[in-house]
Length: 283
Image (cartoon, rainbow, N blue to C red; front, side, top):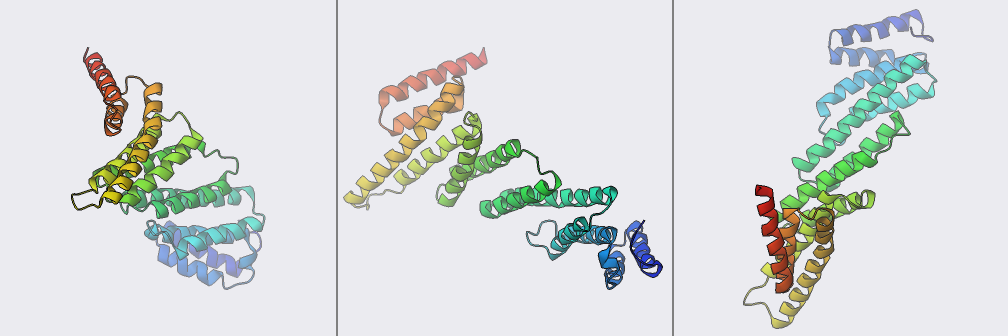
């Protein structure tokens, strides 16, 4: 029960609950906004929870909008409610709404990643997700979820860059995300492999940028830079090979990297290992 409002104001808030039960969110908004014209209502923690809930329901229509005044209002109401030292049941209800808002930002981070191909906005939404969730559980360890998220980002942009190496921003987005994964999990095979692929594709992209009209001095610069990229790719692909010697993608990657570096002996060595791995998988 509401603890600090008069009977007249309680009737208004009961109207809010009637609207919510009827699943009429616009009715609930009108009722709660009317109730909050009273100073005494604004002193009640549970009343602020009602308002937070109503605005959360309204914000569902904007679930794929990064900026939402309705969502911001809902979270502000929770903050005020908690500052008024609510009973445990109200406090727990507030946390449930916050958890839902955190989930909204996580879902938005994934949508921005795959639908809008916007790694910067996706990362902002993911950061917002973490900030809000830590208000729900301040002890939560995000390491596993960070690895999952950034590995997904890296794999996605590695694939996009491989399909269209002219989109250099795809390669850079992928590299930044995958480096975060390796910082958290140095033996992560997927992230290590995809980093090697991005550096290799960047080298290939430079080689493909040359044509018969490219000046000689520029050709030398391009060749030097592409060689550097192939060499940057090499330790990542070697690490995958060390972690998983039968990994056919890593063996193929090493064969191609050594071929690009004009190391025929090494290229043939890994071509042989690749053929042996293929035969072994068929047995």
